[in-house]
Image (cartoon, rainbow, N blue to C red):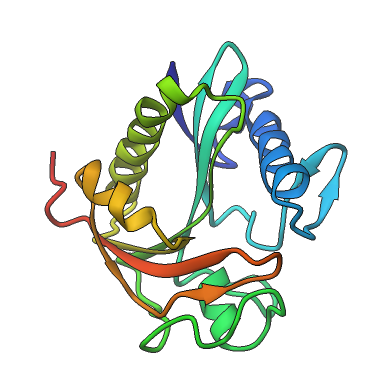
Length: 196
C-alpha cells in the first residue's frame, strides 16, 4: 500500500493516479452515496478541484483505496473560496448555512479537508489500516503546507474514529443533515500536537 500527495505540479509523475482518484470519488459519492455532483468521463469533480488544492491518495496496484482533498482557506476561484465557507455564505444549496458555530476561517494556517472517502472495495479487515494511512499523510501534508489546523465536514460519528487514530478533533458546528439524509458535523482538527 502506498500513499501519495498529488498536486497539479506533480501529477505528471504519477501516471493514472490523479484520474483514478477522481474515478474512485465518483464511485463513492455519485454511485454509492447518490450525491448529485458534477462528473465527466467517469470522474467526479467540483469547483474546488483547482491548482490551489492538494489530494492525498492511498493506493495499491493502481487502485485508489482512499482519498482526501486539502484546500487552503485563503483559496479563491471566481465567486468560490472553499466548501465550508461557501456553504456558510449561502453559495451551496446542498449544505446548510448554519453548519458552523463561528464564522468560517480565512487564514494561511487553516486548510479545509474535504471529499474524504474510503472505497467500498476496501475489505473491512483493512479499513482501519487504510484510514490510518490516509489520516497520517493528510496530517503530514497539511503541516508541510504550513497548516496548524484543518476544518472539515465528516459523518456525525467520525470524531470517535479520529480519537481512535490519535487525531485532535473537536466539533465546530451542530450536526447537520445534508441532501440524501446524511448526518454530518463540521470539525476542527488541531495539528500542533502532530509534530512528528
